[in-house]
Length: 89
Image (cartoon, rainbow, N blue to C red; front, side):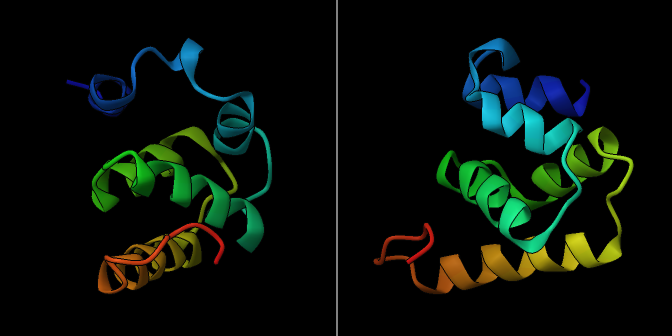
């Protein structure tokens, strides 16, 4: 099963996702604020970090190792703060 199909099992068809998520995935350069918003979307919808980072890597040709590290750091931080709001506190 491809990565997109795995994510779609959790979130529904990609056509139903917010437009900003699709734009961040495929078009925008992965700057910290964009990566944070996209990661928050995946984390908030219980997408495993490995799948989220792999999908982003496959979809965006500007993706790099620093993006992977940042995504993992965000997931780790939000998991440690399990009883707080995770999004842009």
